[in-house]
Length: 129
Image (cartoon, rainbow, N blue to C red; front, side):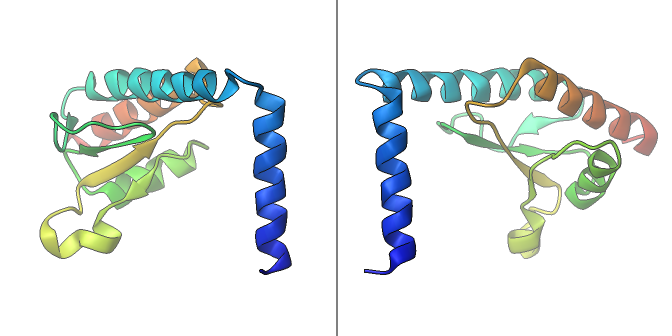
């Protein structure tokens, strides 16, 4: 076993110990709640829709944008917002260049969600998409 693997295992064990007996469940609920709040806010923007509305998710979800995901991410980056992952990087040949994978975790705040929504909305407005 590599010492790096042991370090990662030790950090995981320490995190679980700090969370306590019900901590993992509370953490999972917080992540699911943040993801759902982000998904609702982002899909409320005109022109953005879920790639698969029936898909279940926990930390991440994919949306279809009215333009290229790379352009949206460049715009968000200019505003200091980490917008997600451009699915066209890996699956551009399959029509995914307008799709964005967005993630949330236990640290995602309401202000993070608001910044993402504001950035995407301004990108759509500027692009005329």
